Image (cartoon, rainbow, N blue to C red; front, side):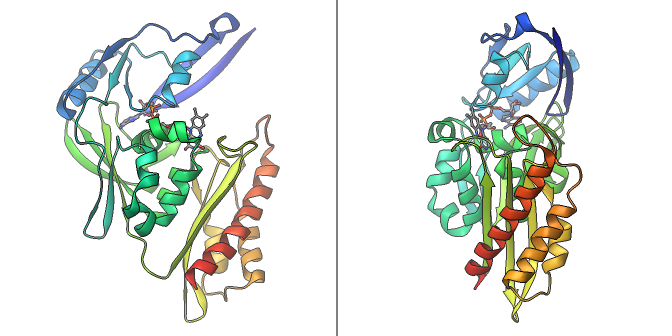
Length: 315
Ligand SMILES: Cc1cc2nc3c(=O)[nH]c(=O)nc-3n(C[C@H](O)[C@H](O)[C@H](O)COP(=O)(O)OP(=O)(O)OC[C@H]3O[C@@H](n4cnc5c(N)ncnc54)[C@H](O)[C@@H]3O)c2cc1C
């Protein structure tokens, strides 16, 4: 039997043909390089790209290693970022929280700055996998991996985050709504490295919530919702909602946002907004774990619960 897997990562589009005998727990052979500086790492990526060789960054390895082991990815070269100093900071710069790509998710979870100043990102981090995965997995790796079921892309859309990328041409900032392209594909170029993610400090009086449903604790979610809102003059304002696990990448929920904007924060308005958000979802993904219509139902239920929770915080 042959199965076709179409896998996209970091703008590289690989069409892989796997036979049963190739499903294995041993990666295909690869070279392993450990640059000491960011410049060295970018130069390596550029060189291999020019030579038409498939080189991949490895950060925490929590997503890439299983893909190598299953031979879903077969890069010729792995370029490890862990020897590069100074990519694991978490700091505030004039109202913006900047997280170095190699900061672990565990360090983000333990950061008082993130807990106090950006609680939505903090809550999302605590939902990622298990503690062991958060210990090893980097924050930047989750953004670059762009898993449709990952919490971070949805939070990035809600918070209008920006991603800093460094490549042969220098540095650029990419807004969240341009960064996540589709299933495991970002707008990073082949020779670019994600070095930082940036998010605003949450303004006082902003309510937020993130909820997800997974079959087992620590699994990637079947569906989830993240959102924020304010209550001004007795009505909801600045409503931002996003869903994950439902489409090939996280999506804003504009119909839900519009339904709640300017409405009194009560149960009926929350139910209407959640129903509008779910109804407008385009072709929710189906798989053996959950049909698309079940995912739509989850979005409605989770959005309604999130709105109640966020309104409570906003008050
Ligand atoms: C059992 C299990 C449960 C999990 N549950 C969740 C979950 O609930 N939510 C969730 O979001 N994730 C989950 N994950 C994934 C986990 O969060 C990974 O840590 C994360 O997806 C990747 O981070 P990493 O540092 O391990 O990256 P790696 O695995 O090293 O790399 C992942 C990909 O990103 C690229 N990459 C990494 N860093 C960079 C960079 N700085 N610049 C450019 N490209 C880069 C790599 O080339 C690779 O393609 C789970 C993983 C496991 C094994």
